[in-house]
Length: 227
Ligand SMILES: O=C(O)c1cc(C(=O)O)c2c(n1)C(=O)C(=O)c1cc(C(=O)O)[nH]c1-2
Image (cartoon, rainbow, N blue to C red; front, top):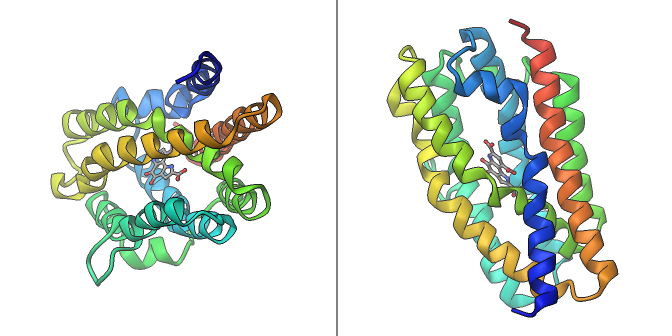
């Protein structure tokens, strides 16, 4: 890696300071301080994010002219959608929903979905549809920061929320391996493709935008389910 690439990677990684692990709602979640309605509200609302991730990834595929990148990126869609009934991340999220006491039907109906979450998630999908594909790939790099939060969350759910059925936590376990693998690939693509100062600045801005998306989702959930 060139010195320039090192600096660029460092600038991308520095966005970790704006990641949603620092959001007050996540801090309270991982400290075991949330009530059942708050956990349920978070799970029901985050379903909208989970459901839209494959559409976001399909937008990246549609805009990407590089076969090698597409071959690798298409796996993300299959990770979330699965290839048959009962498989995939969205199914695993629905099992999480059941484990916290929600029915599949009420989650799928979007009856708990709050407007701010819808707007933030839709903004992420629109970003991937309308911006250059390398920027959309850069915006996925929040996943570089996700594994620590996921393992902390998994431990917190097991320790602090005994009313949640352990069998429903498979989604987080799967992401512990999927997220680092996906993020390393995305980082490699972004570092290879974004060479000029302008391209690199746009990539960092894309990642910053994504931090705002994730933060806004939690702001909206926090507001809808107060202590
Ligand atoms: O629960 C989380 O904190 C969290 C964060 C993120 C992220 O950082 O974008 C993702 C996920 N989960 C996740 O489950 C997931 O599938 C995912 C896909 C992406 C993406 O941008 O492509 N981010 C994330």
